[in-house]
Amino acid sequence: MVTKKTPKVRQPKAELLNQEGLAAYAAWDVDNAVRKFRAAIQLAPDEADYYLNLARALSRSGDFDQALRALAEFLRLEPDADVAERFERLFASGLDDVETILTEKMSDAGLPIELIGASLQMWLEYRIALGREPLILRKPEAWAAALDYVVRKVNLYPVKQREVAETYQVSQRVLHDHFTALVSTLDVMPCDYRFFVGDQNPLDKLVEAAELLDQLEARFRET
Image (cartoon, rainbow, N blue to C red; front, side):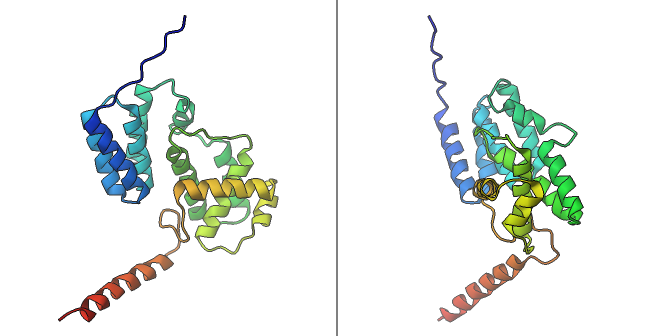
């Protein structure tokens, strides 16, 4: 007879902080998300999901050293988790198959090292951001192609999906599916600060314009 494992009951205050952290993460209030997850961990230091969520928030902020530390704590608590092998691979010193193909193809295309670095960073963040979701890695070329394509689009390179698909020898449909997965999971936008490598980001002008508009609005309403 197989005995069913009793579900673990989470500490209510800690779980409330965790849920608030998830809401902040989704809203791009990353600093607040990190604070919430850290507070949840203080109350429930043996809850693996809180470390995993903290790692996701830290990677979104670009603090990958701390994100990996949080992942190490997750692995300590759940060494046999379904995603353990994927996270353990993040601590390896060598390149994985996706990174190897990506680096070779982008180098052959004469793309700058900064753009290649942005692609590798995107792959690192994506594998963390997935959390407990599985990573389907049947064809590394497809992920390499999608990373190349997304980063070029972010950096306003004139590139066609068909051209990238042909370079990596994958179908446009597969490339599109992987492109969609990256963009939706990481919430990537044009000129995304995380992956934009140019000297002047066009988004800066939008921020300046928004600030100017706020100032003008305030002056307009002065009495």
